[in-house]
Length: 169
Image (cartoon, rainbow, N blue to C red; front, side, top):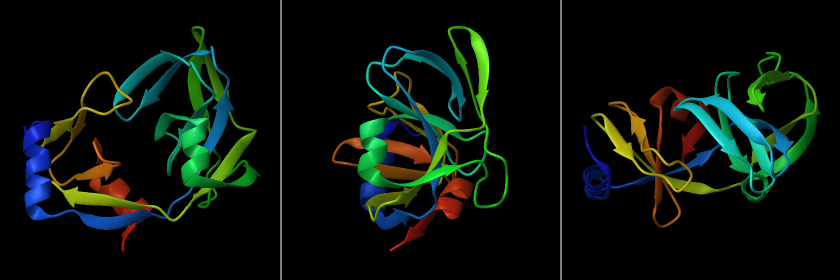
């Protein structure tokens, strides 16, 4: 498995390509001070929000993550409340609050990505990178993409997810 230094060196040597996110996300706001447990792609995440946070859903109900409201508003344009995604699937956002399971199916807002270029590189073997938002390294499989977000932040993105949500520029 490639470590962070190796995967970044590989991507820098091969060359990053520009890509833009084109798929919407769906989100609900969570106020500061709420304890949440959310099943994300990386595993079960537990946290107490310290700032207004968005509980986000991507293409599928199982594709969940947490992101600061300020970052969602910086990178996406709100489109209004929806109950189904673009494919007609009912949107559900499941989580635990203070140990109680909850599922949200209403009050979910759709957001379209603003024009925003990311640098990406497909990685030929398993890798892991440390991000600014997770205490544990995130792992990518062979064929997944390394995404450069900003000057020093990187994250893995699955090949299928990349193909469904991004376009090369």
